[in-house]
Image (cartoon, rainbow, N blue to C red; front, side):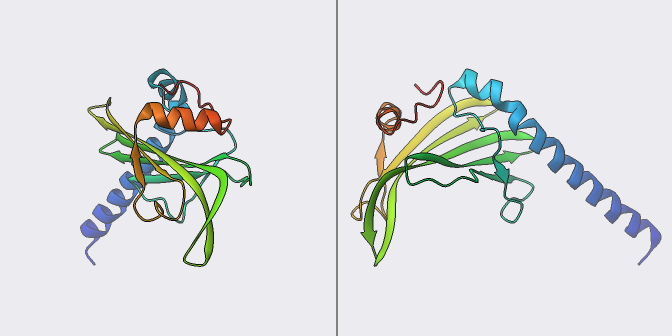
Length: 159
């Protein structure tokens, strides 16, 4: 391989790694004040970044402490060209149901979508039993907030 091609590959690799590290810091814990201002659930302290699932555009943060009580389970951040495009949050309730001979739990998702760093839309879904397991019910943000409050998970700033 020619030296110039090798140099280009090395520089491209270094650039990609540096962008990943910069974006991870930019939209990790340091982005929490902006999340709070926008009413988005903050990334809780002590959460872990799953490097096996994470790539340069999508970061999968998870709560290392699973619970049988309702809890905030994970946050997936999507970044494109160093701009946040999606902040996806998953919460579990305590009620279980049986589907395909396996127990699962009620689950609520709240997804925030951005264009040009501005909050553009919010999508919420709720899986509450085996009938909605494969086709989650689409709910409003107000309904999602109500469910989270009933579960004892009033996420700061949700409105």
